[in-house]
Image 1 (cartoon, rainbow, N blue to C red):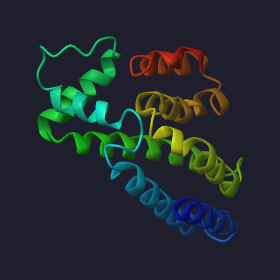
Image 2 (cartoon, one colour):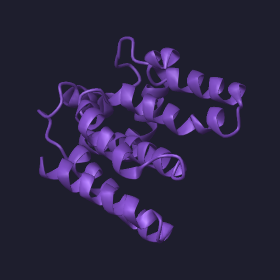
Image 3 (cartoon, helix red, strand yellow):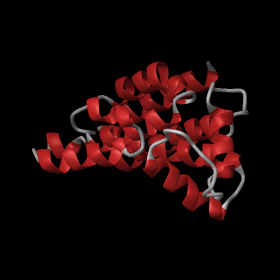
Image 4 (cartoon, rainbow, N blue to C red):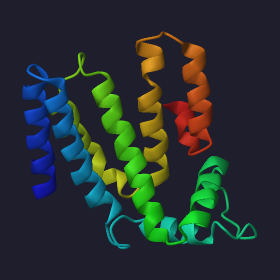
Length: 178
């Protein structure tokens, strides 16, 4: 609860500072990101139903003979590449947490003139953040699509967004319906 409240307070401060200084507002965004990444990335193996599975998947990804079942290919390749650098599965959970939270916060900041920071961050933290501890792949894919959403909103480029959907579906197939 402390983390949720802290993130919401920083989001409120960021929204208030947006009118005064975007640089100061960005500082609060960084604090929010640090809080969420530390909580999500440094969680124990028993926090989140799939955390242990993703940790094991990261550690075995270097062995190409290991059968991951129906796991999407892009997610496997990301695991394979980065696990060859850092073999500890805890880093995998931390890495994917960092990427997911960075993409979500970057997306919110990208629409800074269209969205209220306080409401957006509070909605993410209160509704989606805790679920992202269980559903690492789907939230990674969804955060990537959220980041790419500007192709539809600002550029009205449906082809570019469709390509992003195809890429995201290689991380999790549910991206095809998002």
